[in-house]
Length: 318
Image 1: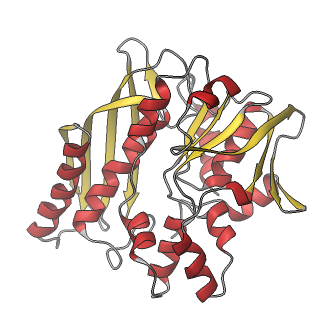
Image 2: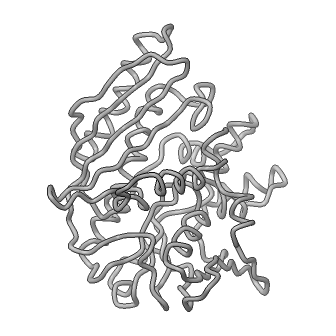
Image 3: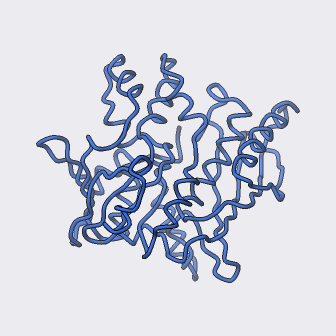
């Protein structure tokens, strides 16, 4: 059973599920967004490949990325950690040093949390952000003829994880992309200035095609992209060639790039800085079989439910 199966069960079980469906919940009564992400040892990270400091940084950054996808200004976090009994004091110090450094960079304050014992290291953070845009971001808001845009580069984190997991040499850029991602808060706050209607927006925490497919399904539209228009770092291509791997697989399915994926009108697109936002495709007609079409030269690959289930990130194994 995968994450989507559990989410369906949860949604069907709860009497009131109106806040479910996106990574952030908007609490209108308080004018804030709330999100929570949990990193579990040997599922989302391994202490053989990261450090307590980098784990602290990443645990905050992934939550700020969710707030960015809601066009929200990050303000506060609560940090809950579960630790084995034999954990050293230095681990906690370095973990919180990493947390503190990211908080300083984005003017975020730690306001509390919890500490419990566990067989594995677990870091769970709740992040709170302030609304800075009067329009709604959601995966269900993609409209016909919208431009499909992304921030940053794709495939670096997936390639970095592959290198670390298989003890392969890789450029430090892609290793850093996996261990120390950058939440696109700056880009989100810039985007918020130009948004003049509800838009489809989420971060690619589980991969580019994962995000596109979820937008397609929730919006009941077909999203078509050109894989050769997706920005990729040359280090990913070099690493893939050296190890006889397909770098485009990292672009499509490599998780944890934490870039923004959005669908906006032409009016919004024309106002955005093209150095920060890259167009990779367009939203097509509404139909009864929403999917993602990936163009690669003269060929097209269709991502339907079966393809998605085969390649999408599984949160229940590493």
